[in-house]
Each structure stands twice: as structure tokens, then as C-alpha cells.
Image (cartoon, rainbow, N blue to C red; front, side, top):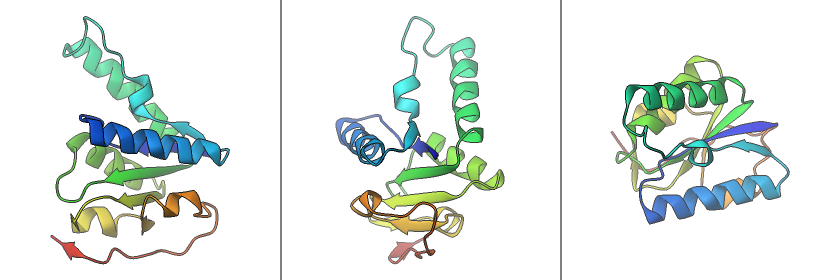
Length: 139
């Protein structure tokens, strides 16, 4: 199984959580594509060429995965991560949402295959699980 790990990684907390998820999944023997590990930081950052390169790399990563795990911070969320989730859903790829925030946007949780905590990432059976609906404040 190959999982695309969608997550923002713009501050220390987000980096710590995405690294934790990468480690949990890999310790379970799962192949992980994490955009954080493929980001190119060089003189090209911010240029159209850099943007196109990163977009294509991540888009292919989504299309080549069996499933997506999205680290979701609720209505505060990275627009790139939200786009990745929607693209996966549109391609028929199941999205497992790891809820890290205090609330949720209905488009994210209704479009997901299940909603779990980061602790549940350690034990979820990715090949056989029931949909767990989001419970909490939603918009």
C-alpha cells in the first residue's frame, strides 16, 4: 500500500505532526509519499518553474497512491492540503482525515472515507474500516 500524506508544514507544530504521521505509517510497513520530503528549496523557490515542478510532483504522487491520509487542522487549513484532499476525492481515492483541529468544514469531513485521531493512525486497518463520521463543531 502507498499512502499520500497531505499536510501543511509551515510551522514547528505542523512539521512535528507530519513527521510523527510519517513515522507511524512507515513503522507499520506502509510506503509513504510526503510532499514535505520532496519539496525543493533552492534559488527557484517562488518562480513559475518551481511552482509547476512541485505541482506536478505532488499531483503524480496523489495519482500513484492507493489512499490519502490528510492531517486536518479544522477550518484553519492549508489551501494546498485542502486542494489535495479534493483532488483525491475527485479521482476516487479514499481520504482518511486525521482530525487535529477544534472544528471541521463539511466539505472535508463529508468527502472523507473516515475521520480519526492521530493515535488511531497506529491501528487503523486501511484495507477494512468502517466510516467514522466527524463529531464536533462544523461549518
